[in-house]
Image (cartoon, rainbow, N blue to C red; front, side):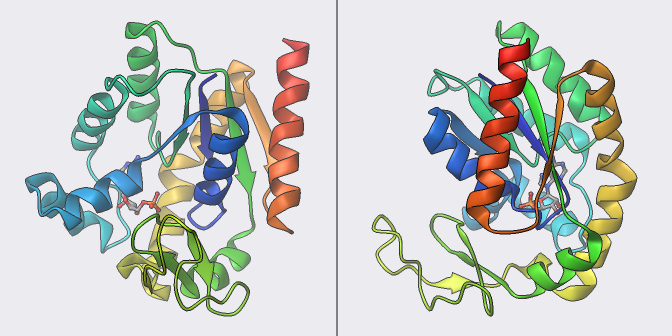
Length: 219
Ligand code: AMP
């Protein structure tokens, strides 16, 4: 099964993608994580992407699409993928259709995680993420000093450069202008599942799984 998670920054796509990865045995591929990995490794792509990321802008389509194509071509994708943060523009959505078709795969469903803008700013400006696994925490609502996951062994948490309040507003604006139109595109295609992204994380995960179950049964 191949899924896309759509939603504004801070809607919980990363958290839910990690949970769906476990529940459904899919591989989680997050475009933001791929860019941050490039940044950390000081690659040419990382240097180029940083310019856009720190301003809350989208990295140009050509760079993003090439990076995703390379990732989706790797042989570790067996049962399917849950894409988080890609596609974010119409050109990327078209490229994804082409990538899927050329590898004999199909996009089964798109989950749109819906969270109001007012909630996003509070969530992101207090967010801390694990430097190793990128799992998000929150200074007030989910306070940890280091990552509690056994694989990360107390790795430190940090605030992403683009989680500062001014950049968060820019990222939200970018989302509404460039990414939100994809919701209509997938709705028209008949594979969009809307899920409320507010409330306990477990409830959001259950809503995702139930929406998927219902949709796959009806197909
Ligand atoms: P994220 O971790 O998904 O919030 O992404 C962090 C930043 O990486 C975004 O604000 C963009 O600058 C960049 N980015 C991630 N995914 C994409 C994408 N699909 N297209 C363009 N830029 C992206």
